[in-house]
Image (cartoon, rainbow, N blue to C red; front, side):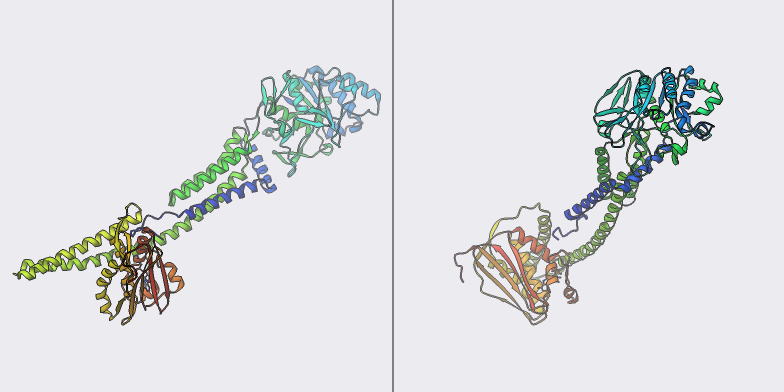
Length: 630
Ligand code: ADP
């Protein structure tokens, strides 16, 4: 790692940032893919039913009523489905004087009855029914319609289909198709026809909706004009909200007919044993609901404009992306409890949004936002937890080494300071000869210069690594800095009875900052002395060709293995052998050397073997001097 001597505030690396967002994007993709699975569909259905019951609008008093063919009606003597047309004619005869608003009959009247006289009588009764709507059925092959006999149809204000669309996964009829097409013929549903006849206005079509009078029904053509039915909760006594009166009750209590005055009457079979399809609603997940009630409720949904519409998938996707990004930013920008609190708020938002929207009539799936929010939160929190912990460890290590570096620097400074202090004290306390006084003044001068140079070098390196220092660009001779460094290092070598051999130097002119380059080379030289046993040799060599200058320092010291070699330029890294050698060090030197050399357009090569010694070579662009070849 490059960087200033002083540890910077830990920032995640580019790779870490990319990895983090790649992880979150995968979480999002996973959630979106999951959203389309049948498992998620079932969960969304359950959530829909739950919200449907939890956020039901205040129930209104329905205009629809059901005239029902129930079990008791069918088991009266002489009744049964075979005589349904007689039952129907009897019932309608009693009903009509009460002047219902409309009568929609959800019964097949397509085939010739067994008794022509019964059919004739039914036709006569139908002719007196106001706003009669009859049922037509799609043939099982889906290619044509089966209509009521013309005998009956002639009195109908409209003919509509009475099909429902139970969900393919759980058979709950949440929607009814307002439009069905068989062959080339399109039929509206019984409920829509009832609503149209009731409103006395035509159906205006557009791709997104149907308009009848002032009511805009959100039923897009691309969904087969599907309408979500707003089922009404049962009354407090458990009876269905849309009132039912059976044919038998009407027969026994003809005065009940008055209740149908001005009502939209839906006539159909409610006898459980005879209901053709077993249809369920979000309120009846155990007891099936008769089809006629579903159509009556669809009519009520339109009449009270209590519509529910699906949120567009693009909006759902956008919300999921928003959640993922918000959670990602929360955990990368905030830390500790703040990030967990913000994460919890976003999770709550993901849970609340489908509920809030449902109350506003918008059906928003729950699985996609919830899985996005949960997977993203877990992934982001886990990532940040582990990365932050790793970084904490690292910065703790850096801090310790930084302290060591400071100790080292202050230690280095103490030597010239002691010399300056000692000399100045001697000069003030004692009467010294002129010669001695001059010598001391010179010492003070050279040591303070050394101190200043040291401070300058540290500051320069620091600024260099921060990238805000213009490098000096002056020419200097490679041989000159080598000679000066060897001169300075010789006392160190002598202390260990080591020899420093300088091989004949090639004349090379370098360009750059001489002070910094000298600092770099001196570092290599002192390392070679530091990490070598006593009575060994250090060889210094300057060679050059093809516009390059190679400054090499070879020792016979402890050496390094390949793994250590890969790390020595990392700030604060020290090998185990170096630690064990007892030599003082900070592990910063080589990182600075590398910084200096690369900023001069050069590079460093290292060869080393454990126990056999090392050779560090600085390679720099250079110009041959005229006396090259010495
Ligand atoms: P320092 O010498 O202060 O520890 P450096 O950055 O100069 O820091 O060197 C980093 C590490 O590289 C040293 O601690 C040592 O482990 C290893 N190293 C450097 N030069 C040599 C060498 N000539 N021989 C063996 N190991 C070396």
